[in-house]
Length: 582
Image (cartoon, rainbow, N blue to C red; front, side, top):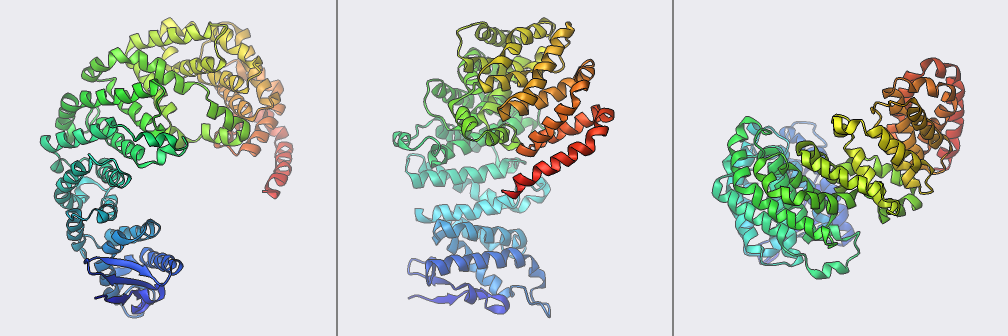
């Protein structure tokens, strides 16, 4: 028997306009169907818009003169059927419907809609695997609603998760032996729920030694297991989107977050002191061992998804400061730096391809804060800095490794780029250590200045970048400071590669700000320098360069004022053609 119900609209007819039909099937599930795919999609979008715009008005649903509200009768109908609709919908509709349930939970749970917890529990325990992904998406929206709330505001979520956590664990253990696409998608979604649950607050009511041990075993198993070999047939750019790699990524997200925020004694808030000791002594090293295997896979040229590599490096980085994890890590650290960190910091084929095809996108990517947040290169740079800062023997060996590369006349330029990238990343440390700070001027003179004559644009850009990071070096020879300024100025004005000009602009400004004698040297050249800066800003729309101009104006206010009107006029005229052809 099929019972069809026309869904709601404004003033009691919401779903009639949307043309959505909930059908009760013999299996006991509500199926979301429609007159046609087009009608179904438009209907669901309409429903989503109604819910996102008007569900918050629930307290006034029956007030006189309310023309835009959803009547309570219709609200209850949607509450009764939205979970089943999400379970049974194809993916293209689930996106819209999960937005609906997110807003419904936000405004109705727990006061008006405790039944949503019962439904989630019912379907989580169901033997029908076809409903698991859909119900996990519903649970994810419940958790996301509380993700950023204070601990005292999360009690309704904690109460629900006391029911769901054992279910999620048991379901995951059941799915672990199944490497199929559908199974791993469900596993990934469980991890996403866990990450949202613990990202900013760890509910200790849900954690004890037994279930922590079980979850840590699950996490390690997922990180350690092999990805199906047929995934190597997929284009490398598309592999990170495969569920096997995404599942590993979320497992590593959780491990890195647990260690960083809750598992590092001395770095946690008071309520997590006991957990931090438990995690560090009982779990951190075993997890580290599994993650070292990931790094050695990368070292052996096996494919590792970038975010998996990035999160692995983040976890390893966290262990450097603690004696128990450092003892386990110490024999591996130099191999990691030379065979994992160093290759990540070298100029790559993909860098070259982007530089040649779209230098403006190359610039955007290199200066994008979000790219830094997800980049394995940035994670490698952070690990290198931490290891050299916390462990003195690592700094000595790393610098020896870099100098060996720089002094080899036959060395691949990309390796020299990587070595200089490493040295520049350590500038803050090197300029504080007496044994190194007196050598840095010599290093610039012998290994950086000559690169300004390189035919390779990325090497000229790296030379500017290194000067940027060593802008506070104490020059004992004035001529070396003048050479640094002159080479950078000429790159800014004359170089024909835009990424080089951008690095030169930033380097020149920080040198002027940090070197007392630099300002006077650049004063006679301020007009062409400012004109070049304005031109680069116009072409790249780079925020870092806007800040450079502002700082240069502060440094040279007297010199810039007479030419400011002229430069602004030229800049405005020059901007018209670019915007006119956009």
